[in-house]
Length: 114
Image (cartoon, rainbow, N blue to C red; front, side, top):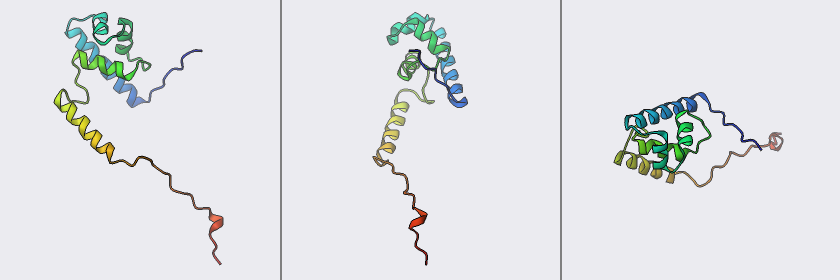
């Protein structure tokens, strides 16, 4: 069975292409081949090429590993700033209820107006 393609909206596509370009520039500035970066993150050079050509089928964890190892700052932060952002996000998520319920629809036939 053929793998279904992922269709990105414009914002996601722009973000993916931006990150892919930043990874490629960072890799080149370090003098690494695609195979070199792939060896550092545990994937093939072909997968690195897929990341750098902004193919949306590459696992997000693999893309983030490539960015981190090549030195691309994620979310405009690096190191301790990124850890601080993560903790703040986790604290905010902890405040969200475990479940979200839709409001009940009131059946208009139940309204007994005399």
